[in-house]
Image 1 (cartoon, rainbow, N blue to C red):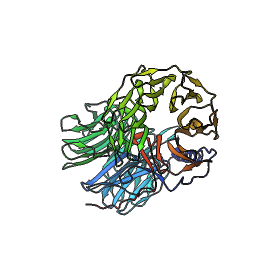
Image 2: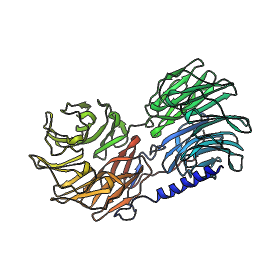
Image 3: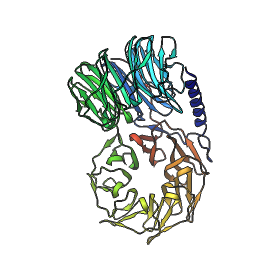
Image 4: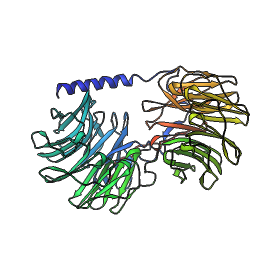
Length: 613
Protein backbone atom coordinates (compact mmCIF):
# COMPACT_ATOMS: atom_id res chain seq x y z
CA UNK A 1 0.00 0.00 0.00
CA UNK A 2 1.06 3.61 -0.35
CA UNK A 3 2.57 5.27 2.71
CA UNK A 4 -0.37 7.65 2.96
CA UNK A 5 -2.84 4.77 3.01
CA UNK A 6 -0.83 3.03 5.73
CA UNK A 7 -0.80 6.24 7.76
CA UNK A 8 -4.55 6.60 7.28
CA UNK A 9 -5.18 3.04 8.42
CA UNK A 10 -3.01 3.54 11.50
CA UNK A 11 -4.77 6.80 12.33
CA UNK A 12 -8.23 5.27 11.93
CA UNK A 13 -7.22 2.31 14.10
CA UNK A 14 -5.98 4.64 16.84
CA UNK A 15 -9.18 6.69 16.69
CA UNK A 16 -11.26 3.52 16.95
CA UNK A 17 -9.35 2.45 20.07
CA UNK A 18 -9.73 5.88 21.68
CA UNK A 19 -13.40 6.06 20.68
CA UNK A 20 -14.23 2.69 22.23
CA UNK A 21 -12.50 3.70 25.45
CA UNK A 22 -14.37 6.98 25.73
CA UNK A 23 -17.75 5.66 26.89
CA UNK A 24 -18.71 7.85 29.85
CA UNK A 25 -18.79 6.29 33.29
CA UNK A 26 -21.28 7.62 35.80
CA UNK A 27 -22.14 6.45 39.33
CA UNK A 28 -23.30 3.04 38.20
CA UNK A 29 -22.92 -0.50 39.39
CA UNK A 30 -21.24 -2.99 37.05
CA UNK A 31 -23.31 -4.37 34.20
CA UNK A 32 -25.47 -7.19 35.51
CA UNK A 33 -28.88 -8.65 34.75
CA UNK A 34 -31.64 -6.68 36.45
CA UNK A 35 -33.51 -9.90 37.16
CA UNK A 36 -34.14 -13.21 35.41
CA UNK A 37 -35.56 -11.31 32.46
CA UNK A 38 -33.79 -9.81 29.46
CA UNK A 39 -34.28 -7.20 26.76
CA UNK A 40 -34.65 -8.71 23.29
CA UNK A 41 -35.32 -7.38 19.81
CA UNK A 42 -38.83 -8.48 18.92
CA UNK A 43 -39.95 -10.88 17.63
CA UNK A 44 -36.86 -13.04 18.27
CA UNK A 45 -38.25 -15.76 15.99
CA UNK A 46 -38.07 -13.42 12.98
CA UNK A 47 -34.91 -13.06 10.92
CA UNK A 48 -33.12 -9.78 11.69
CA UNK A 49 -35.42 -8.87 14.61
CA UNK A 50 -33.31 -5.80 15.46
CA UNK A 51 -34.13 -4.41 12.01
CA UNK A 52 -30.51 -3.79 11.08
CA UNK A 53 -30.05 -2.12 7.73
CA UNK A 54 -29.54 -4.57 4.90
CA UNK A 55 -27.06 -3.11 2.41
CA UNK A 56 -26.48 -5.90 -0.07
CA UNK A 57 -28.13 -9.01 -1.50
CA UNK A 58 -27.03 -11.73 -3.92
CA UNK A 59 -28.91 -14.72 -5.31
CA UNK A 60 -27.35 -17.86 -6.73
CA UNK A 61 -30.78 -19.36 -7.44
CA UNK A 62 -34.38 -18.95 -6.36
CA UNK A 63 -33.53 -21.18 -3.39
CA UNK A 64 -30.12 -19.87 -2.36
CA UNK A 65 -29.15 -16.31 -1.52
CA UNK A 66 -27.53 -14.01 1.03
CA UNK A 67 -28.27 -10.56 2.41
CA UNK A 68 -25.85 -8.57 4.58
CA UNK A 69 -25.95 -5.40 6.63
CA UNK A 70 -25.84 -4.40 10.26
CA UNK A 71 -25.15 -1.33 12.35
CA UNK A 72 -22.22 0.21 14.21
CA UNK A 73 -20.14 -2.58 15.71
CA UNK A 74 -22.39 -5.36 14.49
CA UNK A 75 -22.72 -7.26 11.23
CA UNK A 76 -25.86 -9.05 10.09
CA UNK A 77 -25.94 -11.95 7.62
CA UNK A 78 -29.17 -13.57 6.47
CA UNK A 79 -29.61 -16.64 4.29
CA UNK A 80 -32.50 -17.34 1.91
CA UNK A 81 -33.43 -21.00 1.30
CA UNK A 82 -36.35 -20.46 -1.04
CA UNK A 83 -38.90 -20.42 1.77
CA UNK A 84 -37.62 -18.14 4.53
CA UNK A 85 -34.77 -15.87 5.61
CA UNK A 86 -32.73 -16.89 8.66
CA UNK A 87 -29.93 -15.27 10.64
CA UNK A 88 -26.50 -16.85 10.32
CA UNK A 89 -23.69 -16.26 12.86
CA UNK A 90 -20.74 -14.22 11.66
CA UNK A 91 -17.55 -12.68 13.07
CA UNK A 92 -17.97 -9.20 11.55
CA UNK A 93 -16.55 -6.24 13.46
CA UNK A 94 -19.02 -3.78 11.98
CA UNK A 95 -21.78 -3.30 9.46
CA UNK A 96 -21.45 -5.31 6.25
CA UNK A 97 -21.95 -3.49 2.97
CA UNK A 98 -21.89 -6.06 0.16
CA UNK A 99 -21.93 -9.79 -0.63
CA UNK A 100 -21.28 -11.92 -3.70
CA UNK A 101 -21.47 -15.69 -4.16
CA UNK A 102 -19.92 -18.03 -6.70
CA UNK A 103 -21.42 -21.30 -5.45
CA UNK A 104 -23.24 -22.67 -2.39
CA UNK A 105 -19.81 -23.18 -0.84
CA UNK A 106 -18.04 -20.02 -1.89
CA UNK A 107 -19.10 -16.47 -1.04
CA UNK A 108 -17.52 -13.25 0.20
CA UNK A 109 -18.94 -10.38 2.26
CA UNK A 110 -17.17 -7.11 3.01
CA UNK A 111 -17.85 -4.26 5.43
CA UNK A 112 -17.18 -0.75 6.60
CA UNK A 113 -14.71 -1.86 9.29
CA UNK A 114 -12.47 -3.68 6.86
CA UNK A 115 -14.33 -6.96 7.32
CA UNK A 116 -13.54 -9.61 4.71
CA UNK A 117 -15.66 -12.65 5.46
CA UNK A 118 -15.63 -15.91 3.52
CA UNK A 119 -18.34 -18.58 3.40
CA UNK A 120 -17.17 -22.14 2.83
CA UNK A 121 -20.56 -23.82 2.92
CA UNK A 122 -20.53 -24.21 6.70
CA UNK A 123 -19.34 -21.03 8.41
CA UNK A 124 -18.37 -17.44 7.81
CA UNK A 125 -14.74 -16.74 8.74
CA UNK A 126 -12.73 -13.54 8.90
CA UNK A 127 -9.75 -13.15 6.56
CA UNK A 128 -7.03 -10.58 7.11
CA UNK A 129 -6.59 -7.75 6.70
CA UNK A 130 -9.45 -6.82 9.03
CA UNK A 131 -8.53 -3.16 9.45
CA UNK A 132 -10.16 0.21 9.15
CA UNK A 133 -10.49 0.15 5.38
CA UNK A 134 -14.09 1.00 4.48
CA UNK A 135 -15.03 -1.65 1.94
CA UNK A 136 -18.20 -1.01 -0.05
CA UNK A 137 -18.45 -3.70 -2.74
CA UNK A 138 -17.13 -7.12 -3.74
CA UNK A 139 -17.22 -9.05 -7.04
CA UNK A 140 -16.21 -12.68 -7.58
CA UNK A 141 -14.82 -14.07 -10.85
CA UNK A 142 -13.44 -17.32 -9.45
CA UNK A 143 -12.45 -18.78 -6.10
CA UNK A 144 -8.98 -17.35 -6.59
CA UNK A 145 -9.99 -14.12 -8.31
CA UNK A 146 -12.05 -11.72 -6.21
CA UNK A 147 -12.07 -7.91 -6.09
CA UNK A 148 -13.26 -5.49 -3.42
CA UNK A 149 -13.32 -1.69 -3.42
CA UNK A 150 -13.86 1.03 -0.87
CA UNK A 151 -12.01 3.92 0.68
CA UNK A 152 -10.06 5.21 3.62
CA UNK A 153 -10.17 8.74 4.99
CA UNK A 154 -7.09 10.67 5.99
CA UNK A 155 -7.47 14.41 5.47
CA UNK A 156 -9.39 13.43 2.33
CA UNK A 157 -10.80 10.28 0.75
CA UNK A 158 -8.45 7.73 -0.83
CA UNK A 159 -9.76 5.04 -3.12
CA UNK A 160 -9.05 1.46 -2.06
CA UNK A 161 -8.92 -1.57 -4.37
CA UNK A 162 -7.92 -5.00 -3.03
CA UNK A 163 -7.62 -8.40 -4.71
CA UNK A 164 -7.96 -12.00 -3.47
CA UNK A 165 -5.78 -14.56 -5.25
CA UNK A 166 -6.97 -17.61 -3.38
CA UNK A 167 -4.43 -17.22 -0.58
CA UNK A 168 -4.41 -13.59 0.56
CA UNK A 169 -5.74 -10.11 -0.07
CA UNK A 170 -3.34 -7.65 -1.66
CA UNK A 171 -3.54 -3.95 -2.40
CA UNK A 172 -4.15 -2.81 -5.98
CA UNK A 173 -5.08 0.77 -5.23
CA UNK A 174 -4.88 3.29 -8.06
CA UNK A 175 -2.51 6.13 -7.22
CA UNK A 176 -4.00 9.60 -7.29
CA UNK A 177 -7.68 8.60 -7.09
CA UNK A 178 -8.86 10.65 -4.12
CA UNK A 179 -12.49 9.54 -4.03
CA UNK A 180 -14.63 6.91 -2.40
CA UNK A 181 -15.12 3.82 -4.51
CA UNK A 182 -18.62 2.46 -3.95
CA UNK A 183 -19.09 -0.45 -6.35
CA UNK A 184 -17.22 -2.97 -8.47
CA UNK A 185 -18.34 -5.47 -11.12
CA UNK A 186 -16.02 -7.90 -12.86
CA UNK A 187 -16.86 -9.51 -16.21
CA UNK A 188 -13.67 -11.56 -16.39
CA UNK A 189 -10.09 -11.65 -15.20
CA UNK A 190 -9.30 -9.08 -17.90
CA UNK A 191 -12.38 -6.87 -17.78
CA UNK A 192 -13.93 -5.07 -14.83
CA UNK A 193 -15.29 -1.75 -13.66
CA UNK A 194 -15.43 0.27 -10.45
CA UNK A 195 -17.32 3.49 -9.72
CA UNK A 196 -17.41 6.06 -6.93
CA UNK A 197 -17.88 9.63 -5.81
CA UNK A 198 -17.69 12.63 -8.14
CA UNK A 199 -18.44 10.47 -11.16
CA UNK A 200 -15.30 8.38 -10.65
CA UNK A 201 -15.05 5.44 -13.09
CA UNK A 202 -12.16 2.96 -13.20
CA UNK A 203 -11.55 0.17 -15.72
CA UNK A 204 -9.55 -3.06 -15.22
CA UNK A 205 -7.83 -4.48 -18.33
CA UNK A 206 -6.16 -7.47 -16.74
CA UNK A 207 -3.03 -5.55 -15.74
CA UNK A 208 -4.04 -2.27 -14.16
CA UNK A 209 -6.91 -0.01 -13.12
CA UNK A 210 -7.26 3.12 -15.25
CA UNK A 211 -9.56 6.15 -14.78
CA UNK A 212 -12.16 6.54 -17.53
CA UNK A 213 -13.96 9.74 -18.45
CA UNK A 214 -17.40 10.24 -16.91
CA UNK A 215 -20.14 12.44 -18.40
CA UNK A 216 -21.13 13.78 -14.98
CA UNK A 217 -19.74 14.52 -11.53
CA UNK A 218 -22.53 12.94 -9.49
CA UNK A 219 -21.64 10.23 -7.00
CA UNK A 220 -22.07 6.81 -8.58
CA UNK A 221 -23.38 4.07 -6.28
CA UNK A 222 -23.65 0.90 -8.39
CA UNK A 223 -22.40 -0.67 -11.62
CA UNK A 224 -23.53 -3.82 -13.45
CA UNK A 225 -22.00 -5.01 -16.71
CA UNK A 226 -23.77 -7.33 -19.14
CA UNK A 227 -20.87 -7.59 -21.60
CA UNK A 228 -17.76 -5.66 -22.65
CA UNK A 229 -20.03 -3.46 -24.79
CA UNK A 230 -23.08 -3.14 -22.57
CA UNK A 231 -23.21 -1.96 -18.98
CA UNK A 232 -24.92 0.43 -16.62
CA UNK A 233 -24.10 2.62 -13.59
CA UNK A 234 -26.45 4.56 -11.32
CA UNK A 235 -26.02 7.14 -8.58
CA UNK A 236 -27.08 10.28 -6.80
CA UNK A 237 -30.12 12.31 -7.85
CA UNK A 238 -31.33 9.66 -10.26
CA UNK A 239 -28.14 9.55 -12.31
CA UNK A 240 -28.05 6.74 -14.91
CA UNK A 241 -25.08 6.05 -17.20
CA UNK A 242 -24.73 3.54 -20.05
CA UNK A 243 -21.56 1.97 -21.50
CA UNK A 244 -21.66 1.06 -25.19
CA UNK A 245 -18.16 -0.37 -25.50
CA UNK A 246 -16.60 2.97 -26.36
CA UNK A 247 -17.77 5.55 -23.84
CA UNK A 248 -20.14 6.21 -20.97
CA UNK A 249 -23.16 8.40 -21.73
CA UNK A 250 -25.90 9.77 -19.53
CA UNK A 251 -29.33 8.16 -19.95
CA UNK A 252 -32.71 9.71 -19.26
CA UNK A 253 -33.92 9.08 -15.71
CA UNK A 254 -37.52 9.24 -14.45
CA UNK A 255 -36.50 10.07 -10.86
CA UNK A 256 -34.43 12.49 -8.80
CA UNK A 257 -34.07 9.96 -5.99
CA UNK A 258 -30.61 8.61 -5.21
CA UNK A 259 -30.15 5.26 -6.95
CA UNK A 260 -28.05 2.90 -4.85
CA UNK A 261 -28.25 -0.53 -6.47
CA UNK A 262 -28.57 -2.16 -9.87
CA UNK A 263 -29.36 -5.59 -11.31
CA UNK A 264 -29.23 -6.13 -15.07
CA UNK A 265 -30.64 -9.35 -16.54
CA UNK A 266 -30.31 -8.61 -20.25
CA UNK A 267 -30.16 -5.80 -22.74
CA UNK A 268 -33.93 -5.49 -22.43
CA UNK A 269 -34.46 -6.24 -18.74
CA UNK A 270 -32.97 -4.62 -15.64
CA UNK A 271 -33.73 -3.07 -12.28
CA UNK A 272 -32.47 -0.15 -10.19
CA UNK A 273 -33.46 0.72 -6.62
CA UNK A 274 -32.81 3.62 -4.28
CA UNK A 275 -33.94 6.11 -1.68
CA UNK A 276 -37.58 6.47 -0.77
CA UNK A 277 -38.25 2.92 -1.93
CA UNK A 278 -37.91 3.90 -5.59
CA UNK A 279 -37.79 1.02 -8.07
CA UNK A 280 -36.96 1.52 -11.75
CA UNK A 281 -37.31 -1.05 -14.56
CA UNK A 282 -35.43 -1.09 -17.88
CA UNK A 283 -37.42 -2.55 -20.76
CA UNK A 284 -34.82 -2.14 -23.45
CA UNK A 285 -36.01 1.28 -24.49
CA UNK A 286 -36.47 3.35 -21.33
CA UNK A 287 -36.17 3.35 -17.57
CA UNK A 288 -39.64 3.51 -15.97
CA UNK A 289 -40.79 3.87 -12.37
CA UNK A 290 -42.27 0.63 -11.03
CA UNK A 291 -44.77 0.35 -8.15
CA UNK A 292 -43.03 -0.06 -4.78
CA UNK A 293 -44.62 -1.27 -1.54
CA UNK A 294 -42.21 0.72 0.66
CA UNK A 295 -40.97 4.24 1.22
CA UNK A 296 -37.88 3.00 3.05
CA UNK A 297 -34.51 3.39 1.42
CA UNK A 298 -33.45 0.45 -0.74
CA UNK A 299 -29.73 -0.35 -0.70
CA UNK A 300 -29.38 -3.62 -2.58
CA UNK A 301 -31.19 -5.51 -5.33
CA UNK A 302 -30.66 -8.78 -7.21
CA UNK A 303 -33.07 -10.28 -9.74
CA UNK A 304 -32.68 -13.60 -11.55
CA UNK A 305 -34.00 -14.53 -14.98
CA UNK A 306 -37.25 -16.39 -14.55
CA UNK A 307 -38.92 -14.10 -12.05
CA UNK A 308 -37.16 -14.39 -8.69
CA UNK A 309 -35.60 -11.43 -6.93
CA UNK A 310 -35.10 -9.50 -3.72
CA UNK A 311 -34.46 -5.88 -2.80
CA UNK A 312 -33.20 -4.97 0.67
CA UNK A 313 -32.67 -1.75 2.56
CA UNK A 314 -32.98 0.44 5.60
CA UNK A 315 -34.66 -0.86 8.73
CA UNK A 316 -34.30 -4.42 7.46
CA UNK A 317 -36.61 -3.88 4.49
CA UNK A 318 -36.99 -6.96 2.28
CA UNK A 319 -39.04 -6.83 -0.91
CA UNK A 320 -39.66 -9.90 -3.04
CA UNK A 321 -40.10 -10.00 -6.83
CA UNK A 322 -42.29 -12.81 -8.16
CA UNK A 323 -42.02 -11.95 -11.83
CA UNK A 324 -45.07 -9.70 -11.76
CA UNK A 325 -44.85 -7.40 -8.73
CA UNK A 326 -42.73 -6.39 -5.77
CA UNK A 327 -44.27 -7.28 -2.41
CA UNK A 328 -43.29 -6.76 1.21
CA UNK A 329 -43.66 -10.03 3.15
CA UNK A 330 -45.68 -9.69 6.34
CA UNK A 331 -43.69 -8.05 9.11
CA UNK A 332 -40.71 -7.34 6.86
CA UNK A 333 -41.47 -3.88 5.47
CA UNK A 334 -39.58 -0.95 6.92
CA UNK A 335 -41.40 0.90 9.69
CA UNK A 336 -41.04 4.58 10.48
CA UNK A 337 -39.11 5.79 13.50
CA UNK A 338 -41.16 5.16 16.64
CA UNK A 339 -41.25 7.93 19.26
CA UNK A 340 -43.50 6.76 22.11
CA UNK A 341 -45.14 3.65 23.56
CA UNK A 342 -47.88 3.07 26.13
CA UNK A 343 -48.98 -0.35 27.35
CA UNK A 344 -52.38 -0.99 28.94
CA UNK A 345 -51.83 -4.69 29.57
CA UNK A 346 -49.56 -7.48 28.38
CA UNK A 347 -52.03 -7.96 25.51
CA UNK A 348 -52.86 -4.36 24.65
CA UNK A 349 -50.46 -1.55 23.81
CA UNK A 350 -49.75 1.23 21.34
CA UNK A 351 -46.71 2.84 19.74
CA UNK A 352 -46.56 5.96 17.57
CA UNK A 353 -43.94 7.63 15.42
CA UNK A 354 -42.93 9.47 12.29
CA UNK A 355 -45.24 10.07 9.34
CA UNK A 356 -48.28 9.40 11.54
CA UNK A 357 -47.23 5.81 12.22
CA UNK A 358 -49.47 3.96 14.70
CA UNK A 359 -48.84 0.37 15.80
CA UNK A 360 -51.02 -1.81 18.05
CA UNK A 361 -49.94 -4.80 20.16
CA UNK A 362 -52.57 -7.52 20.61
CA UNK A 363 -50.50 -9.89 22.69
CA UNK A 364 -49.11 -11.73 19.68
CA UNK A 365 -48.06 -9.18 17.07
CA UNK A 366 -47.54 -5.50 16.45
CA UNK A 367 -49.76 -4.39 13.54
CA UNK A 368 -49.96 -1.10 11.66
CA UNK A 369 -53.22 0.77 12.32
CA UNK A 370 -54.53 3.45 9.99
CA UNK A 371 -54.56 6.98 11.34
CA UNK A 372 -55.47 10.44 10.01
CA UNK A 373 -52.09 12.11 10.67
CA UNK A 374 -49.15 12.36 8.29
CA UNK A 375 -46.96 14.38 10.66
CA UNK A 376 -44.77 12.77 13.30
CA UNK A 377 -46.54 11.56 16.44
CA UNK A 378 -44.43 11.98 19.58
CA UNK A 379 -46.60 11.02 22.55
CA UNK A 380 -49.31 8.49 23.36
CA UNK A 381 -51.37 7.73 26.47
CA UNK A 382 -54.11 5.14 26.75
CA UNK A 383 -56.82 5.34 29.40
CA UNK A 384 -58.62 2.18 28.33
CA UNK A 385 -58.99 -0.16 25.38
CA UNK A 386 -61.51 2.26 23.89
CA UNK A 387 -60.04 5.57 25.02
CA UNK A 388 -56.60 6.91 24.17
CA UNK A 389 -54.74 9.91 22.82
CA UNK A 390 -51.71 10.59 20.62
CA UNK A 391 -50.06 13.97 19.98
CA UNK A 392 -47.42 15.25 17.59
CA UNK A 393 -46.19 17.85 15.15
CA UNK A 394 -48.20 20.89 14.07
CA UNK A 395 -50.45 20.60 17.13
CA UNK A 396 -51.80 17.20 16.07
CA UNK A 397 -54.01 15.43 18.61
CA UNK A 398 -55.61 12.08 17.79
CA UNK A 399 -58.27 10.23 19.79
CA UNK A 400 -58.91 6.47 19.86
CA UNK A 401 -62.49 5.37 20.56
CA UNK A 402 -61.94 1.63 20.36
CA UNK A 403 -62.62 1.46 16.63
CA UNK A 404 -60.58 4.16 14.89
CA UNK A 405 -58.27 7.12 15.40
CA UNK A 406 -59.74 10.56 14.69
CA UNK A 407 -58.03 13.93 14.58
CA UNK A 408 -59.31 16.44 17.15
CA UNK A 409 -58.87 20.19 16.61
CA UNK A 410 -56.44 22.09 18.83
CA UNK A 411 -55.78 25.80 19.31
CA UNK A 412 -52.07 25.48 18.46
CA UNK A 413 -49.84 24.54 15.57
CA UNK A 414 -46.83 24.05 17.80
CA UNK A 415 -45.21 20.64 18.10
CA UNK A 416 -46.69 18.60 20.93
CA UNK A 417 -44.27 16.21 22.61
CA UNK A 418 -46.27 14.43 25.31
CA UNK A 419 -49.77 13.76 26.59
CA UNK A 420 -51.04 12.62 30.00
CA UNK A 421 -54.70 11.78 30.63
CA UNK A 422 -56.36 11.46 34.02
CA UNK A 423 -59.82 10.66 32.71
CA UNK A 424 -62.02 11.06 29.67
CA UNK A 425 -62.66 14.65 30.73
CA UNK A 426 -59.30 15.66 32.15
CA UNK A 427 -56.01 15.54 30.27
CA UNK A 428 -52.93 17.54 29.39
CA UNK A 429 -50.47 17.93 26.54
CA UNK A 430 -47.20 19.89 26.36
CA UNK A 431 -44.80 20.88 23.61
CA UNK A 432 -42.48 23.35 21.97
CA UNK A 433 -42.07 26.91 23.25
CA UNK A 434 -43.71 25.98 26.55
CA UNK A 435 -47.16 25.34 25.08
CA UNK A 436 -49.58 23.65 27.52
CA UNK A 437 -53.00 22.34 26.49
CA UNK A 438 -55.85 21.04 28.69
CA UNK A 439 -58.67 18.69 27.69
CA UNK A 440 -62.00 19.10 29.51
CA UNK A 441 -63.92 16.36 27.76
CA UNK A 442 -65.12 18.65 24.99
CA UNK A 443 -62.19 20.60 23.61
CA UNK A 444 -58.49 21.33 23.96
CA UNK A 445 -57.63 24.80 25.32
CA UNK A 446 -54.36 26.63 25.85
CA UNK A 447 -53.39 27.08 29.51
CA UNK A 448 -50.96 29.79 30.53
CA UNK A 449 -47.56 28.54 31.59
CA UNK A 450 -44.52 30.17 33.21
CA UNK A 451 -41.98 29.35 30.47
CA UNK A 452 -41.37 29.56 26.74
CA UNK A 453 -38.78 26.79 26.86
CA UNK A 454 -39.64 23.53 25.15
CA UNK A 455 -41.53 21.00 27.28
CA UNK A 456 -40.79 17.35 26.53
CA UNK A 457 -42.74 15.34 29.10
CA UNK A 458 -45.72 15.52 31.43
CA UNK A 459 -47.23 13.25 34.07
CA UNK A 460 -50.37 13.83 36.15
CA UNK A 461 -50.97 12.13 39.50
CA UNK A 462 -54.31 13.77 40.38
CA UNK A 463 -56.34 16.72 39.07
CA UNK A 464 -54.41 18.95 41.49
CA UNK A 465 -50.96 17.37 41.20
CA UNK A 466 -48.97 17.23 37.99
CA UNK A 467 -45.46 17.81 36.67
CA UNK A 468 -43.88 18.75 33.36
CA UNK A 469 -40.20 18.97 32.37
CA UNK A 470 -38.27 20.34 29.45
CA UNK A 471 -35.33 22.21 28.00
CA UNK A 472 -32.58 23.65 30.21
CA UNK A 473 -33.76 21.56 33.15
CA UNK A 474 -37.17 23.24 33.18
CA UNK A 475 -39.42 21.72 35.86
CA UNK A 476 -43.06 22.77 36.30
CA UNK A 477 -45.69 21.78 38.87
CA UNK A 478 -49.50 21.95 38.62
CA UNK A 479 -51.38 22.61 41.87
CA UNK A 480 -54.92 22.55 40.53
CA UNK A 481 -55.06 26.23 39.65
CA UNK A 482 -51.80 27.17 37.93
CA UNK A 483 -48.51 25.89 36.63
CA UNK A 484 -45.47 27.20 38.52
CA UNK A 485 -41.79 26.80 37.85
CA UNK A 486 -39.61 24.88 40.30
CA UNK A 487 -35.91 25.18 41.02
CA UNK A 488 -34.12 23.20 38.31
CA UNK A 489 -32.30 20.05 39.45
CA UNK A 490 -29.54 20.37 36.83
CA UNK A 491 -28.47 22.42 33.81
CA UNK A 492 -29.32 20.13 30.92
CA UNK A 493 -32.58 19.24 29.17
CA UNK A 494 -34.98 16.92 30.99
CA UNK A 495 -36.46 14.56 28.40
CA UNK A 496 -38.72 12.16 30.30
CA UNK A 497 -40.74 11.97 33.50
CA UNK A 498 -42.58 9.36 35.56
CA UNK A 499 -44.32 10.00 38.88
CA UNK A 500 -45.16 7.21 41.29
CA UNK A 501 -47.04 9.63 43.55
CA UNK A 502 -47.04 13.26 44.59
CA UNK A 503 -44.14 12.36 46.87
CA UNK A 504 -42.01 10.18 44.61
CA UNK A 505 -41.01 10.71 40.99
CA UNK A 506 -38.14 10.57 38.55
CA UNK A 507 -36.97 12.62 35.57
CA UNK A 508 -34.09 11.92 33.18
CA UNK A 509 -32.36 13.87 30.46
CA UNK A 510 -29.24 14.96 28.66
CA UNK A 511 -25.74 14.24 29.94
CA UNK A 512 -27.02 11.43 32.14
CA UNK A 513 -29.25 13.69 34.21
CA UNK A 514 -31.26 11.63 36.69
CA UNK A 515 -33.35 13.67 39.10
CA UNK A 516 -35.60 12.50 41.95
CA UNK A 517 -38.68 14.25 43.39
CA UNK A 518 -39.21 13.89 47.15
CA UNK A 519 -42.40 15.99 47.56
CA UNK A 520 -40.41 19.19 48.02
CA UNK A 521 -37.75 19.48 45.35
CA UNK A 522 -36.00 17.85 42.43
CA UNK A 523 -32.50 16.60 43.25
CA UNK A 524 -29.92 15.26 40.81
CA UNK A 525 -28.76 11.85 42.01
CA UNK A 526 -26.14 10.75 39.42
CA UNK A 527 -23.03 12.52 38.21
CA UNK A 528 -23.31 13.93 34.67
CA UNK A 529 -21.67 12.27 31.67
CA UNK A 530 -22.06 12.41 27.90
CA UNK A 531 -24.80 9.78 27.76
CA UNK A 532 -28.25 11.21 27.02
CA UNK A 533 -31.25 9.62 28.74
CA UNK A 534 -34.54 9.73 26.84
CA UNK A 535 -36.99 7.55 28.75
CA UNK A 536 -37.91 6.49 32.28
CA UNK A 537 -40.61 4.22 33.71
CA UNK A 538 -41.04 3.48 37.41
CA UNK A 539 -43.03 0.51 38.67
CA UNK A 540 -42.41 1.03 42.40
CA UNK A 541 -39.94 2.78 44.69
CA UNK A 542 -37.61 -0.18 44.21
CA UNK A 543 -38.19 -1.05 40.55
CA UNK A 544 -37.79 1.13 37.50
CA UNK A 545 -36.03 1.57 34.18
CA UNK A 546 -34.28 4.35 32.28
CA UNK A 547 -32.94 4.24 28.74
CA UNK A 548 -30.43 6.42 26.96
CA UNK A 549 -28.11 6.72 23.97
CA UNK A 550 -24.53 7.68 23.35
CA UNK A 551 -22.96 7.86 19.87
CA UNK A 552 -25.61 5.57 18.43
CA UNK A 553 -25.52 2.90 21.14
CA UNK A 554 -28.36 2.26 23.59
CA UNK A 555 -27.91 1.85 27.33
CA UNK A 556 -30.59 0.51 29.67
CA UNK A 557 -30.46 1.07 33.43
CA UNK A 558 -32.48 -0.64 36.16
CA UNK A 559 -33.34 0.91 39.55
CA UNK A 560 -33.42 -1.57 42.42
CA UNK A 561 -34.24 0.89 45.20
CA UNK A 562 -30.66 1.78 46.01
CA UNK A 563 -28.83 2.25 42.72
CA UNK A 564 -29.02 2.31 38.93
CA UNK A 565 -27.47 -0.76 37.30
CA UNK A 566 -26.77 -1.09 33.59
CA UNK A 567 -28.47 -4.07 31.97
CA UNK A 568 -27.24 -6.04 28.92
CA UNK A 569 -29.11 -5.31 25.67
CA UNK A 570 -28.83 -6.45 22.05
CA UNK A 571 -27.41 -4.07 19.40
CA UNK A 572 -30.37 -2.13 18.04
CA UNK A 573 -31.30 1.25 16.62
CA UNK A 574 -31.61 4.29 18.85
CA UNK A 575 -34.40 3.86 21.40
CA UNK A 576 -36.71 6.81 22.05
CA UNK A 577 -39.07 5.61 24.80
CA UNK A 578 -40.05 2.69 26.99
CA UNK A 579 -42.99 1.49 29.08
CA UNK A 580 -43.26 -1.37 31.54
CA UNK A 581 -46.41 -3.43 31.99
CA UNK A 582 -44.99 -5.15 35.06
CA UNK A 583 -41.69 -6.14 36.61
CA UNK A 584 -41.49 -9.01 34.11
CA UNK A 585 -42.81 -7.42 30.90
CA UNK A 586 -42.10 -4.17 29.09
CA UNK A 587 -41.37 -2.55 25.74
CA UNK A 588 -38.98 -0.01 24.23
CA UNK A 589 -39.34 1.57 20.78
CA UNK A 590 -37.09 3.60 18.52
CA UNK A 591 -35.65 4.36 15.12
CA UNK A 592 -36.39 2.23 12.07
CA UNK A 593 -39.32 0.65 13.85
CA UNK A 594 -37.10 -0.81 16.59
CA UNK A 595 -39.08 -2.92 19.07
CA UNK A 596 -37.38 -4.32 22.16
CA UNK A 597 -39.19 -6.38 24.77
CA UNK A 598 -38.25 -7.09 28.36
CA UNK A 599 -39.64 -10.48 29.25
CA UNK A 600 -39.20 -13.07 31.99
CA UNK A 601 -38.07 -15.66 31.14
CA UNK A 602 -36.44 -14.53 27.90
CA UNK A 603 -37.83 -15.96 24.69
CA UNK A 604 -35.72 -18.62 23.03
CA UNK A 605 -33.41 -17.31 20.32
CA UNK A 606 -31.38 -19.58 18.07
CA UNK A 607 -29.59 -19.35 14.74
CA UNK A 608 -30.94 -21.69 12.11
CA UNK A 609 -28.65 -23.95 10.06
CA UNK A 610 -28.26 -23.09 6.39
CA UNK A 611 -30.60 -25.56 4.67
CA UNK A 612 -31.13 -25.23 0.93
CA UNK A 613 -34.36 -26.39 -0.66
